[in-house]
Length: 465
Image (cartoon, rainbow, N blue to C red; front, side):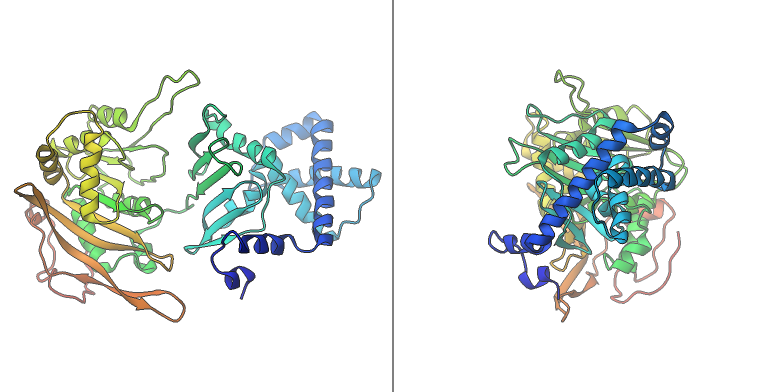
């Protein structure tokens, strides 16, 4: 068992033990610092002495073809060692060359973490403490930055290509990497222990519904039902907490949209990867240095209505744009999809009410609830289970108003029965036996579910639409 596993969840006391374990003995720390000085010396020599040909080679280098860059770095490595002999093991030389290459072409110390497909999230809590999420579990890594200045240099490298800025007057920012990974940065004075960076990695290959079934996020019967709902133009809200997999599920649901429809996607940071031919991708924009020029999600939702969309997909509603989204769903844009942060389907509807009030319009609560109940047909509730897995815990129909209350009914739900000896969640997906009231939409769109679909607990028949 690893030291991290034995120590359990880090607290203020045992974190020091883990940091010491990652650094090793005093001799190891001294050797590491000497190697660090050597790397900095090689890096400076390259920057100061590069020929025009070498500059061109570095400027045009790609991550997948770095042999020429490695050769340039190796030449300068030998020149530095010739003037300043330092005993570097042969195996360590290749490692140092790779680290210098990552500094020059990539994002420095975290470049190997970005390339590791088993890592889904990278959390940088200051220059010395970098955690990752791997297979749903948080782990402390031995990756470190030299100091705050080194970390800020990498942050600037992330933000500069997309025209974002960060400084004391604007100390937090959302951005994305070239591959689409989502980045949040917050720096002092708001972050007291140094710059903090959170990277939600973007999978190279979008997950399919078959992947989600294999992961245990849902079962085949739920997948068939959700595919039918998307094709029947049911308005769907995907609800869940942070890191519960809402965007992944939204991506999968979007894949069910027919290829001949015009889709407009609206996001703060573009993450959705739709494979259809007719997709328009819109992204919000923050204010410039003068505090002007911001384009909000709400602005984009309003503009999307003038773009003749068949479907509108909003990556996440979190403010007044909820009212515009509901009005779009209520005025002929059936089959729209969005996500929101909430812990249950009922909470999701309450959150929508709150967000509509943020629009600035003084609407009665009953009028808002009528808008919600008539616009949203289905809530797909996603949760992150204690073992790190993601599950669709409820598929809930939003029905109608009874008095001042929105009525709902669960169509499917996940029942957890316990944990196995490895700490993995044990449970099963249940069909409640209740039929949604919007089945008429299925028939209008030529979609037929097998007879008894909502009755059988065990369903293995393959259905194609």
